[in-house]
Structure formats: structure tokens, C-alpha cells
Amino acid sequence: MDVDKKAWVIATRESRLALWQAEHVRALLTAMLEAPVELLGMTTRGDQILDRTLSKVGGKGLFVKELETALEAGEAHLAVHSLKDVPMELPEGFVLAAVLEREDPRDAWVSPRYASLEALPAGAVVGTSSLRRLSQLRALRPDLKIEPLRGNLDTRLRKLDEGQYDAIVLAAAGLKRLGLGDRVRACFEPAAMLPAAGQGALGIEVRADCAERHPALWAALQTLTHRPSWLAVHAERAVSRALGGSCSMPLAAHARWQADGRLALHAVLGSVDGAPPELVHAEALEPVADTTAAEALGRAVSERLRADGGEALLAALQTPAP
Image 1 (cartoon, helix red, strand yellow):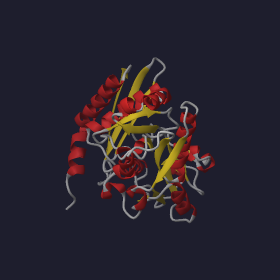
Image 2: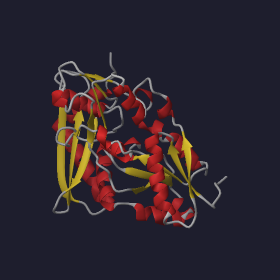
Image 3: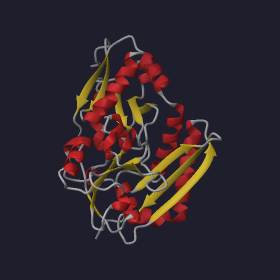
């Protein structure tokens, strides 16, 4: 049964950051739609499983499945996600309806004692459960000890403050959105630590029939879409999709608009084993006017990654450990 049409309902995770994101979208939609907008808070499996890395328990889809179930059942009209947590292939019957203007996409260096990665002593402990960050950190500082770090943003900061880590790496966007920008000692420029596809962007997911069933909502979501962010993240996600990317793959992809209006897309594929760690880079610069062109750019960069050494890394990643 559908939800009461007197109110639009947003499905969201219940972490403080997820609720901030949903509240942000609610405020924007409330100003546009002639009906109240409510939140449906939910706990996902990704929030519940904290003792194992995502790459070992099913990937980023664990953060969105329950929200999609609520959409499918008619309990909610839309779901708000951190786009970097959304699988590259949405299940049949769902579409990405909007991408809001992107926040800072960079990774943030957070440490109470050390001002930068370079300032850490050999053997210091850095927390992250992202294979993307792990591979790039090991390339920058192979002498460090990289330890898993799970939990919502507040939990990760608490573990740092308790002394379990010398430093942790988090998305700058989440800290800034929660007014915690003062915890950021420095941000990694993309040349040093390339962000994840979609990092810093909010995506809104709906049922594929939303435009027909709820034309007013669909029209409002189109208005919310920030076109430059939409095209950039589609190019990034196309790289990952072409390579079969998931949280079990140390892959980064980041697109930036140039002054001449072209889109520059840079991708990095890493290794998680071996010393020294290996990183393969690829990039391309093209005019991008629509989603089709953005995704073509992403596929072109993925092909360059494969050709320049990524094929061997992909084969190693897919080979089961002995």
C-alpha cells in the first residue's frame, strides 16, 4: 500500500550524517512542494555489521537495500544517499533521479597530534576501511600501519580520540556538513589521494516509475539537480561500472571541470598486497554536454587503466587468496 499522499516521505539511514543529508533535502523539497515532507529513519545491515570490512560482507549495497525495500513497498517516495555509498548498478526498478551540488570531494586528514601524513613517525597507526584509501596511503607511506576502521562518523572520531589510532582518513564533506570542519587538520589534494567516485555528492534514488506516478515530485527533483555535479559523478561512476568496481576494489575516480568547459577525469587502480604497492593511473579530457558523453568518458578512462597495467591488477584482485 502506498504512503499517505498528504506527505512526501524520504527514506534515510539513521546516522547523524545521513539524517543531516535527509533534512537538507527535506528543506529544499518543502519549499517547492505544496505538502509536508517527512523522514523515515532506517537501520541498514551496513550500519549493523561493524566487525568486518564492507569488502568481506557484501559491499556498499548493504547501506541502501533497506531503503530500496521501503521505496518498493510504497512506504517512502525517495531515498537520500551519500553517492559514494551507492552501488554502480542500481537494481531493476530504481533510478538515480537527482544529484545535488557537490560538497568538497577530498579526503580529510584527522589527527589530534600530527598535522599531516608526512609528520607521522614510522609505524604509526592510521585508520581506514577503504581499500581505495589503503592502497594510496601505502603508496605514500609504506612504513605506516593501516588498521580497519568501521562505524558512523561519530564512532570513528571517538575511536581516534580514545587513542586507538594516531590518525584517520575521512571524507571532508561529511565533517563539513556536520559542522566538524575544525577536526580537519588538512585535506589531501586529488593529486596525492584521489577521491572515490561520487564522493561529496548527495544522490536521490526513486522508483523507476516515479515520473509517471508522482510527476510533481519528479519535476522538483529535476530542479534540485546540479548539472555540473551530475555529469561529473556519472563519468566517475562509469569508470567503476566498466571495471566491475565495488568496495572490494581499490579504485578511485574523480572528475573536475576545466576553465574551457571540458571535463577532466582521472582514475587510479591500486593493489592491496605486495611491496611496494602498485598504482595505475589513467586520465582523459573531453567536452561533456550530456550523460551519454559523461559515461563515454568514463569508459574511455577505464580502457586506458586496463591497457596501462590495470588488467594485471584486476586479475590479481579477482584471484582468491591461498
